[in-house]
Image (tube, rainbow, N blue to C red):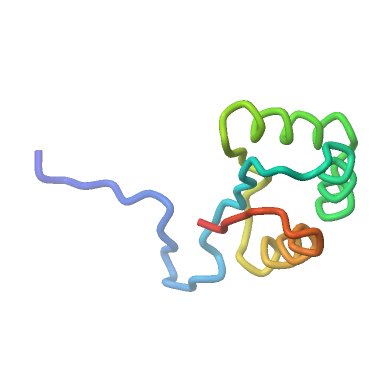
Length: 89
């Protein structure tokens, strides 16, 4: 079969509509500071932020959220205020 299905590509070619991922990496920050900053950056409740932090701590990295690049850049800039290690894919 030669048909190929393309996923995660914008039909219109508008790059802003492509969903990206914001990843948080494990680091040597104070636990409560990480949780607090995640809450501040994302608006998620404390339980969700703790789950993200636990996953980053145990697996080395965690998905914070997905979305358009402008949204992720805003969240990422808040996380960077305390020098958390992040990446947008």
